[in-house]
Length: 144
Image (cartoon, rainbow, N blue to C red):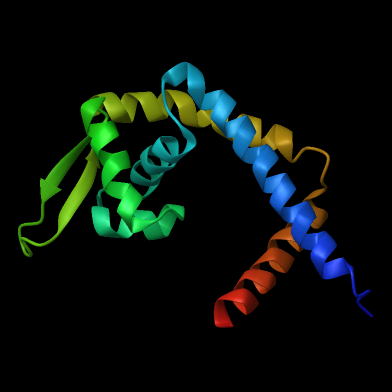
């Protein structure tokens, strides 16, 4: 049976943990001149390949109005380029430049190690349970 205060406590704990993890990422990206959102775009493009700019915001959970600004900053740093879609002129893809690929290939292994460090006090079984539970909560909230 759920205590009447547990859902609010769970929300607070989840949001605080998220803030602390985001702060770790922010600090880790500072030496590279990136903010967490820029890193998230580079990571997405590294793992998933070229992406329509309109879709990036949904995949990294930022407002579509902000993604153009983030992509502009990455283009200005020569980490990303825009590529027009040959089939549909309304669609523009973001693509890693060689410099962007080299940067994310340098950063990502360290980022992965850092996230492993963040979660090191949680057993594999506990982590699996956390992932499953948070997914259930997210799906429920999405359906409301």
